[in-house]
Length: 410
Image (cartoon, rainbow, N blue to C red; front, side):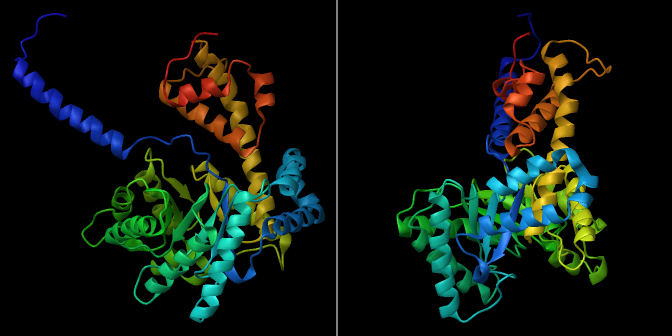
């Protein structure tokens, strides 16, 4: 190493400062990790759920697809057979039994019984080969009189579950302040100690449906601090379409996922969660395929496609009909994205320029590989299809590109 005019004590001081910065950044931004994000979260009110709900929703979705194949073919004919197979075999990836807005306020004895029943259903899904991979409950909020009811419901669900199975998470609505999240993390720690559960086993999602969660009175961005306050317990951020837009003063006819007020909130959530390992989940639409199925199917397909293009890969589904257009739009999006990404990644791995004239950098290769992995995980394409098109792009190579690790020449 060549001589330097930098005094050694100054170098050591700089190194100490920068090492501390590196450690802090690694702690706050560990990356996306290996968890496979579901394409949706289905919400079903606690008084309308049963162990058979995933199968029943899938059957209803298949019927809707078959009855409206013409309009769906206009939206994406090539993916329809794969969508129908998905709806038949594994229609729901993630499901919450809802004790909040979808359930309302009931006598304590009634909600007690429903919470115990919910825990039993969740335990059945956890042990079923064909159950949803992700499952849990949405409890009531932590504000005022709802707090005690929310905590009691969660305790009863956990008692009936008799543990915390893989895939369990609970959603907390109406989060408005960072200290609520700190209290929530303390609640999880207390429940784990009191119930003999493994430390860190309880994880939650924060429902962002208040302007105060996005911008606080002092001008700060609470949602970013909320992720830090949760430690490693925050599983995701879910957007609440109607509460949020209503709180912003948007008139009821204009409250929608694609309103500019909603777009702003989700963009802030996306930035706050970037590289933290916390997922962002788009909200719901109240337009369901009942009175005008074709219009509702077109609308939901448009909203899902729009969200995917903005980097929101998960959204709420509130009706069996939403499953049809959720999977259709998702399969179409990732099939097209994989077809674009594959030649560029092959050229990148081979250290050649892409035939289309694109010279990609490591960050772009990372994003391309991440997109291909998402497409494989959701089922838009199979590993066999990818191996036929690009045998050098194995899942190991794709993961290495996402991690920005070196890959060998082909």
